Image (cartoon, rainbow, N blue to C red; front, side, top):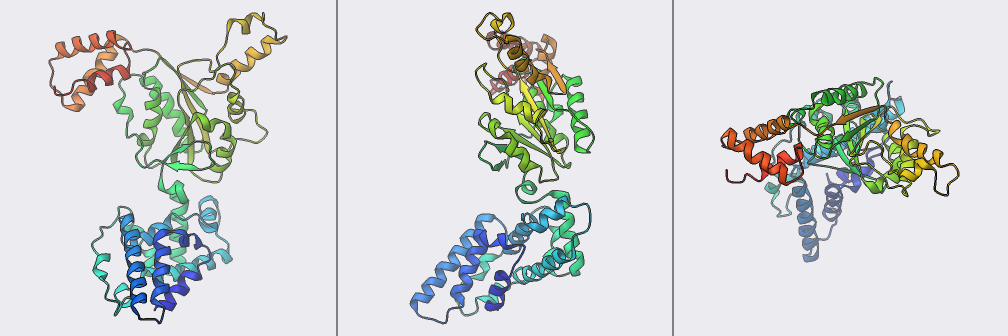
Length: 415
């Protein structure tokens, strides 16, 4: 059994990335120790250490060994998963055969009986029991448990990659890009929904309509959301994930440092079938900063076409995103073609096909925001008293806005 299991691991062809997983790596070490013929004290010590390391790494995942193995297979990034995700036709016979062989080897691992494997080793196999079934895995156990034909298993796996993507993009729907040529998945994205945002209905409708078109492959625009601070521009973009949950939509937050490497990010995302919105918050540039030129090229103007699965949504408090001085317009400085400089600065905002404006909320809308938040939190205050205190708060703080309303409600601790 030990040799057969080691051979199954060693002979994986398309799923060789599994070797890099800490649990699989520790299992390989355990099998090597078990395969030794030495039975002395040093061998027992090595076996106890290998078993302990395997248990530690497995328990760190929160899954049983079978669950973890299935998780690795479903989210692997390999030639087959890439082809299955992006292909509109059949998988070529040679690749299907390779996948089929790998699934046979993975089935051997999936069916591994640790009590037999560790016979006579005086190790507590019961420590591998008691794991609960992760949500969403039940329908895909047949890929590894051997209950389906080989063709059915390959097809089921290909359909999974086509529907949910692969690698890190099958694990998350929210990411961060900081310009280091790698995506960081966000396990706990903001759960805010559109219904949590009071007012601004026309802005919600415009943003949702554009995004729904994008998700289903219809023409859609890059979007600039600009207006007064605290009016919910950023929250509205983040709410798209929960509002369109179940769609092939992902949100990538691009940091200030990541703007310079936008071409690398776009090239990376082109390789996936998900629809990506690059979210740039509080976008603006000083007159001496030049990062906006790269952003302009991505929006419109590069020789390489922007992939149809990528859009840019940016928020800003300024309609014209690059700071401009009166001297830019007067031409009294030393630059001969001052008008050209001014046009270049203004053209960045023009490249967003859809501009959504967020004015400061009127007094009544501000009070509606406060009352809605108070009701959702179950706080008890007389309406007149609540409104009086809310108005006092906004006058002494930042003026009426959604952010001011939330900060005021946050201050009502113990009410």
